[in-house]
Image (cartoon, rainbow, N blue to C red; front, side):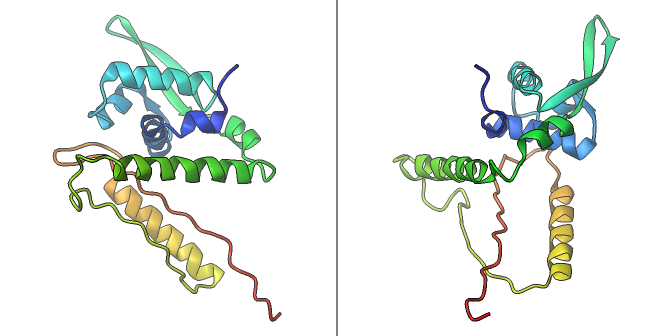
Length: 174
């Protein structure tokens, strides 16, 4: 039985592959390997195959390049939209929260870690905004993500950043 599509996507390496494809719109396997240079090519190809098998990404073109086949990939938005429903949203959220919790739990239980060296933090902030201000905030946040891109470079290491926008609380006096 194939894994659930969202379980497949929660893997950190596969998330980075998905982000690289989203950033470029469509990209080749070689370009993914160049942008995620800290992960061995064989590992990336294995994760790309898992994403293709789960219909998260799709092959939109294949070309022969120096005796091998170079695939161009894109996100399979139609398939993802089929799974992204309000009926299964709470289950998706729970999986995501458990994934984040498990990463913190593993880190905090590692007796050989040096406290304070990994810039670990968590925060919860209430920001009063109207819908227009919130849309502007999201636009600026997206620009910030694009600024730092998802490609590896000297001195960079993958940092797992989770941002959650919870629905506003309803005022009980209304």
